Amino acid sequence: MNGVATSYDDQTSTAPTPSPALETATPTPTPTSTTAPATAMAPMYTSPRNTSGPLAVDTMTTPDSNPTSTPSPWHRSNPHSLAAPTSAPTPSKTSQFIERITAENETLKRELKLERTLRENEARQVSAARSRAEDSRAEFQNLQVLVDANKRALDRKDRKLEEMRTALELETKRRKDADARAEEALSMLGNIRSETQRELAAAYEQRHCAETVVEAVREGYKRVTDAYERKMRGIQNELGELRKQRVEDADRIKRQMIVSDQIQHEVARKLRNETKMEDLMGKYKEEHRVEVDRLVEEAERMRAALPSKEQEAEQVLEEMKAVRDKMKWVMAIKASQEQGGQQQQEEQKVENAKPKGKDKGKGRK
Image (cartoon, rainbow, N blue to C red; front, side, top):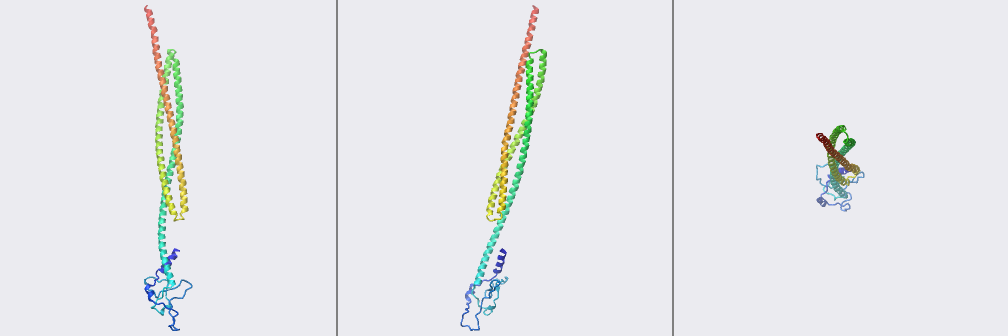
């Protein structure tokens, strides 16, 4: 349709319009004049009607403003105009209609050019929106990869915590066994104090063995507790880094949501002019909303999982503190018992020394 309008405008653009001076200067012939003889007819300034196409326009009496232009199909020679070459007819309805069509065609051309420029601007804006949408989609995919990596890291940390928990339970059982053995050794030591010197020497020997065992257990427990403390510090540092990454992911998600909202507003404004892009952009907005909701849900799950891990770490620390307090209590009891045993030994030595002095006094008497 636009091609037809353009060709029609090109054909009619070269048609000259009669000047107003010629219109006022040329007399208008009257076919009903009675002064002319019967054999001489008045000159006709209109061509016969062409039933197979548009009406022909007489161009003999109108001056050509652009002689170098191509002749229009409207410019046809009138065979009846040779009788009066110097006279020009008044503008007929056909010429007025052609002029009106020419003016309308010019306005349509201008509107067409304006519409083309608007379409080109809209196409450039739509392409820019598509590029921004592609960038946002790539950023979203990168964020999805980061979320998956964080999820795998959390799973690895959970497995490590389970392994550490099992190791801690085993170490607790060993410590309880060592405490039981230490208590048995201390009870045996208290029962043997009242026996003979031989049994006392054996008790000393057993106590020395028990001390070596307790010292070894204490050193091993200290090493284990130090290792667990280092591991807990490492886990706390990793949890801090994960929290920072979670905050950064939340900020990125917020920025992504803001960018997506801006893109949605931009696309909504462009969709009022481009109806063909409505379905495509609607599908993209739906998919993008689903992906963002899924990302937000995963972030919420990560946020809900971190406090439980922190509580478990705090429970482990409290259990380790309780174990340390129990060991200190056992060591204090052992030290008090050792001090009591030394005092009893000194008392026995004093009692053993007293009879010897009495026997010496009797011998002298």
